[in-house]
Image 1 (cartoon, rainbow, N blue to C red):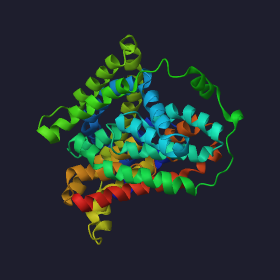
Image 2 (image 1 turned 60 degrees about the horizontal axis):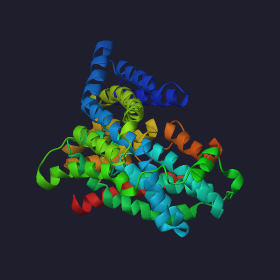
Image 3 (image 1 turned 90 degrees about the vertical axis):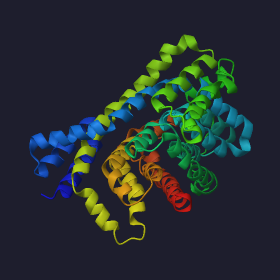
Image 4 (image 1 turned 180 degrees about the vertical axis):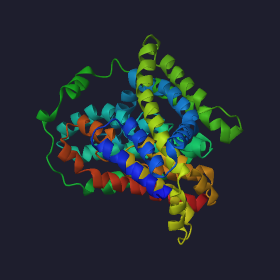
Length: 423
């Protein structure tokens, strides 16, 4: 069987297994094995390609584990909640959707996972939604849209691994996402959110126990805003030294240093163990998923599928440019994950994208943006985690998918547009 077709069958098998609630890691590994065997490579060569795929992303996995220090600090010290509450208070009730979107974008942009950012802000959104009688669909979309915007300019696993696979500086890939993220934020809040029918308006009965507890707790136990921001600011400064001064501080160093500074600045040094444990738990799940993702990426990379895609785009003007976002979008749809989508796309198609003349930074940035397009499909955890944060049923959560996809498309088009302007 043609290796491209075999790889596609292996990918489809992984999708079916994930939808059937089989562990995503094992689903991806089984899909990789099936793809290699159907390609006629035999068991030994199939395993060799799978291991090669994992080896390619191992450096990124190590950096992702190190990023857990910063993530744990932001969540467990209360810094993330302080930042979100400060933004909402500053903008006021009149601009609540904008405030929620900016909060999610900043938290995700600082390194908090997008689903964790939404879960962190959700109790505040519920309180405001009940007080102002707002649509819970609009509230959730504002947070998801803002989180997607932050995801393309963050030191999160998807950005780290895209930068690693394209051998591009992480800080430069993050910077390439700033303008598309701002464009996406504005369009999300002022165009896409208003498109949603109001639906059921929230009332006091919609408040869950977590929201009520958050409302009663007040701000006394939370760190000051400047203390909450210090850790992420230090991380960004360290990462920015490479393009600004030619001083290379690897993310494996910059991210934990920012986390430690944040722990000390917030005065939560006695919670250091809790911060590290939480961060490691969050990142280890991603790291394990990436092992499975790497096995499938190794099969796809060894197959002729990239040649097929190149051939399909050969007749397009600047067809090589579109390979990055298309690959990111397709792989995010297959895995329902920004991280897994960016991993498979960048590992499998990175060489072909660079060979088409696309600069490494923009190849990584466009792949990363493309991976936000369909990462919210129901066979992924993001769909269920974000819906659960606002008490959505599955049917209710499904109604947001077209709007989320539109947000991802805006980010992708914004990244492509920036490439043509400055790339």
